[in-house]
Image (cartoon, rainbow, N blue to C red):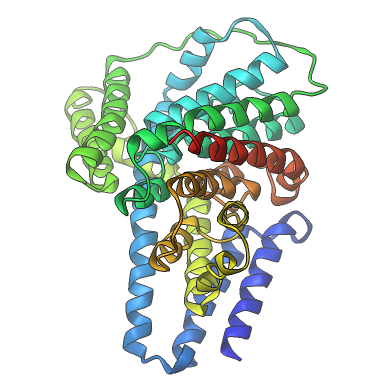
Length: 415
């Protein structure tokens, strides 16, 4: 009975996200309300006779995951907020972009940039930077939605072949299911699926985009120093994570603190109205609260026992088909607990199947805008990108996911 109530509340919460444009209620408010309500109900009416201590332990685990992601987002978004306010990103775009480019070429350029950048950094940073680039171009609303959709798919695809690029990829690698050389085989199908999506989204986009070169803003040495600290932080995050298993959160917070200290020293003699630490206030807290609400809902979904039922797919169908469906299911359920549930189930599969599963859980979340961190960030940053507008492109996304999955399975035959 309690499980049914919680599942109903979760369904209502996701429905309210879908119809946000109709009811005009911010999705951060609804997800936060229903997410906390589900957990309060689980304390008042314990599931399966669990003690309050057990539920508290489960909640603590969920809160730890949320806090880690929240702090990581806060650090990355503060860096980007500063670089944006100083015109650094706009200046780079002005220098790189030609005065005229076709919409189709821009689509491929954006897709490749997001794919490559997410391969060398985390998904959050890659999404924020990629979105900042296209939003500085002043595109039409419908076209902006297409470019943002491509970024979400490309970012999720870019990190799938590296253990530093996606958490689920790292989990599967650490469990000994795939090797680094195996994972590198995913680069080709992942990139080709991004190029396919760029091709499909650019259908009918034949116009030339004319960019008026704005006057270059003078970039202070302090701003260049902060940009160097940012990219050094990104590289250090990847390096320390691989070599010493240092949590990315710690490295990014260290980078943020270095930015504050360096700026304090460099700006000491300048007459400025805004302290560096004040840029934290420029963060879109709607995005962060939306994250909290969604992850609370997903945590409740996990404790109700829905995730453990997904593993039953492997008893009724072959692994290649079950993996494909698991990827699509990860669009509605966090792919991390989904992957953890499958690993704990100790299902026996070949390396070829584990490789295709890695692709599926890494990219499958792109099927829905709320299915990945990249999607949630994009939804919060681009007001034209809603659940409904993203869903209109679902056929293209499903086709490209299917193409990439088939390619990953084919590449697995070379192992």
